[in-house]
Amino acid sequence: MKIFLKYLIQLTFLLVAFLWIISLNQKIDFSWDGIVFTGTASTILFAIILVIFLILIIQRVYLYIRHSPKRIKNNLEIRNYKKGISAIVKSFTAMFNNDAKELLIQSNKIENYLKDNPISLILKAEAARKAKKFDLAEQHYNKMLLDSNTKTLGLRGLLEQNLKKQDYHHALIYAEEIYNINSKLDWIHRTIIQILIRTKNWQKLIEINKDAYGKKIISKKEYFNSISIAKYEIALIKESFSRHESLKLLNEANSERPNFLPIVKKFANLLINNNQTLKAKKLLFKCWLTNPHQMLLEEIMFLVKKEDGNLINIVSKLIKNNPENYDSIVALTKANIFSNNWARAREVIKPILSSKPNRTICELMYEIEMGLSNNAQKANSWKSRALLGDAEKTWVCKHSGLSQDEWSSISQGEHFDSLEWTWPDSTALNRSNYLIPNITESV
Image (cartoon, rainbow, N blue to C red; front, top):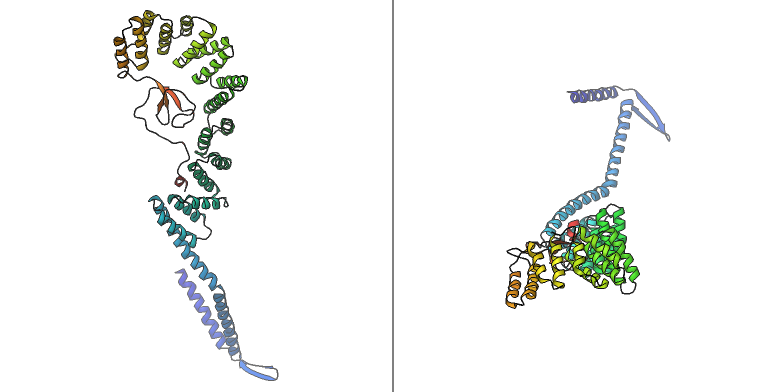
């Protein structure tokens, strides 16, 4: 209703104006350059209105012609944008279908339709990687470094390329640059650590973990555990030319991770070799009190030999606070076997004998039977039983599930500080390779 009234008022106004102009019959004369013009007021007013109307039409035509190229360009850009978006969708479909050929076709279309669009570069790099054209992929990754929006992704692509080539020197350079840009990425710290352990760059590992701990990327426990092992590894390297420096590092490692068996074992061994037997004994006794373990027995025997002491007496003192512990019983049994106390060894081992004794117990019983009766047939029956016995604890990688007899800072599956003293898991699968994830995960 309001619109109708609005148009009615406008129409009425125009009609009144038109009738008023027509009613103007007064003659008007004027001359220009000696020529006299005569007309009515209404005719002159109509002429003025017509001139104004023509001027407005000419102006509109001019503006239309002037803006046509821009309008055409905008329409073209809209059309290309729509085609570019369509190519992006098709590119991702091809990528998830592992269709490298189609991915390359669509990424080229993106480049044609969306000029200077980084998505095209990203997808072309991925297409080259899937087609195993690694040199071409590397060229695209290097181009990504020129754009701040794609720099991290370009660095990640170059990192992955160098990891595949096992060029850990350049891989570390790219990994550190990513870390400096964004240290909070959940995979970058882990990747750097994997590179460092494969190159055995222990000093750098200490530095990066110190920085990561300061930025709260790793926990306090993870920090101290890692640097203690790094110092342990450096101590092994320095042992051959600087025992003093090696002892200093092992002392620090033991302080940062008290009573950790591999560190205690090596530290005690060096102390004994350095004639610091009292300190070695305190170290071994303290560790056995909280963490009894068979791997310390070798150092106990070395200590006894160095001091010319009595092995049974030393072991008895060693286990007095946990005599019923499995490892304590094994230790005392071995001490009696070493001293040829066969009957006593048999008495000591009884509490851990079972219907399915493990390999360690069977091997000890073999030695006891040979010592008591020298009956090879009876003794060998214990070796046969070892094949059918219960599983026993060993060093198991918490990431891969792989087990190994000897502890090492890097497991057989190449995981750092991953070994735990526990029962092997026969169903364990390799759950993680701990290197950089596939580049497609970040697209």
